Amino acid sequence: MENRIDVPSKKKLPFPIQPKLREYLGHYNRLTKLPIDYLDLLRYTVAVPLLNYDGEDTLWQTVHYTEADREEVHRALTSIYALLKTDGDEEVLEHLSVARIDYCTFGNSNPFRIRIINRLNDNYDHFYVKKADASRIYGLELEDLLSPNRFTYVVNKETLIEEHIAGVPGDDFIKRHLDDTHFNQTRIAKEFVKFNERCFVRLLGDMRSYNYVIDITPDIEGSQFRIRAIDFDQQSYEGRMNFYLPQYFKDNNPIIYLGIGTMKPETVRQYQMEERSLIAARVRTSRKRLNRLFQIMSKDQISTDEKVFQLKHELTKHHRSDEFLNCKTMGEIVLTNIQLVLAKDFKQSIVF
Image (cartoon, rainbow, N blue to C red; front, side, top):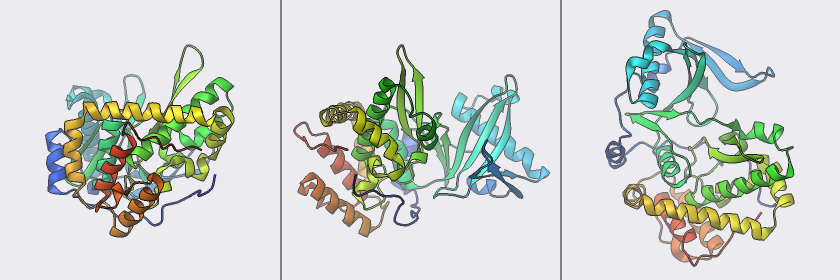
């Protein structure tokens, strides 16, 4: 349980989307023209702190616009929602309205969260408007290609639109849902092992408990659990290897202790190898697209030279392999790490 970490070393630097990455996004239909951009939403005039059901500050603010701007902003945002959900079919717009616009002052991306409500049944959904950032785009692409989850997002110039991922926030889940049957606790621990492995293979960092959600699906006996990352700001940016292993964040300790109490090391290793096999299968089915992505990512700058140097040497020591020493970018490190841990003869395991 040593080497626990809490926070990134410093606030992450933003990186622009280079022409080659923008060309890739256009080829795979990730680029689209939007009726409003991130900077337009910053024209709000009033911001009120958003509290949760317990009266605690959520670090989000509900923002309001002048009467002159409000109608234009709301019309544009419902059009974006239709673009995400119905491929731009605007017949649905007459039933949709913007219920709330929240702005987060915490973190790197300072997102806007848009709540859309269907007036026919009062059902609501969300999506996010963020500043586009190259490393975040790479994180979203790798999530879509290598995880068990599909992810919808679009980019326009310097604006990023992301779908909402439904689930119980990890920190709330740890507080309220770990006291379950032994059968379900074993399933929770199993899923965390798999999530830990997915993050490490593709070097997605900063998976503290509030940066992922748990999707709970009732099953014939008990429930099935799926952990999904919701924050991709820290895709291969930090230099510390442990930053890419959720098991090393202190606020994940309750799940770690749950795993220690319900699984033997050989069981942990089995689940790790199962997840690597699934990732390998996804690599095979998306090989052409992944090759194109890594050709771009390997030449892009999405971190500092100091962090690249630190990470490649820590991974060299961890894997006992010199494959990383020739890497010059984070993209090359991610590609090397994927190739190494998915190799059939690679037996090293990460055990709690």
